[in-house]
Image 1 (cartoon, rainbow, N blue to C red):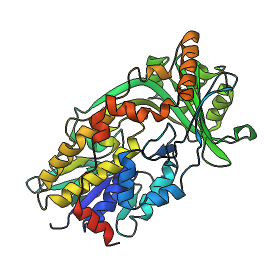
Image 2: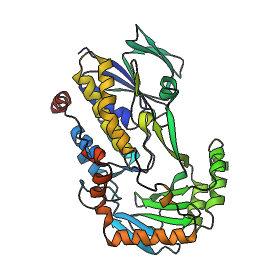
Image 3: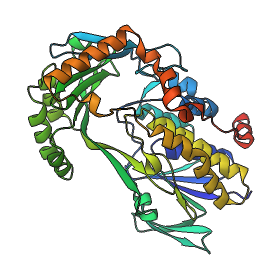
Image 4: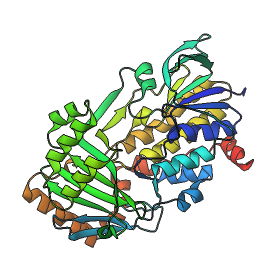
Length: 414
């Protein structure tokens, strides 16, 4: 097929992964990222299931291992900090526990993808897509950029995240599935008491859950999550961080365990991220020569643990279909949707009672939750979840990455 001139909006995970494949197929790729530089910050993410396979096919899995966060497992504590249950890493990438074998900071994965694309992809920072329209009888896309310039491309890939501007322009009827869980993430300094390399969670009651995890010897991450005060939370998310911090402080102050410490660190942090957990459900991922990828198309929420994996797999399938369908780009985009959507929809299904069971309200519910997680740890139920998942969501477990000889040959040339 003739080489395509491709514009990718978004320099996170999905966009650069698509550029990785498409550039190796001979297409000219440009990535625009609204931040002034590569975003090397962010929270801890992981690779799971089919996402691990996609990373292996990209040839980056060893680098992911090298830069991985050495987290030993996930623990649940009570208000005094006593460990009630601990779920260690399984040591088996095929049957992972709550802590993946491939835990990595988002910024580190972004750096890996940037390193693998910078020599053959044009990166433009501090600029984004303001508008677009189809041209040349729908075979090209004319794009207006935030700096006032315009350019025309054969394909526009919207990989600009959960709040995608490309999606809002392409598919105004896209829907959100809110969970009513409001979150604040931030980095915080590590102290002597934080010696264990564990993702520690505490259910405080009142629909509140707190957590910490540690990705370096000096710095870790704090998490405040709640299902309380929904109306007030939604309102404050539209306001400035001072008001957001004030509301979260009021909700979590005095909640037990390290709540006061986390509130104090949140107040001092300059990297707080406030949001409501939700899923993006878009009926169609493409229109003409515009296609959505990653969270822009199908954000699954952190309850699935599969956001990063879906981005890598989606990029692989999109590039594979473009390679397989010659000059018929329209058919390639249809096949990308047809083949990948069943896996996405299966992944977006959360377990029974989620998220409510993670945010007990009454003192009795907290005690019941603590008893249940302790029982799960004793019975090693985390290692049985893979089997349970196959029973309840067989379509997700059975879905396999398609084989694309063109992509295999493209990586063999490197």
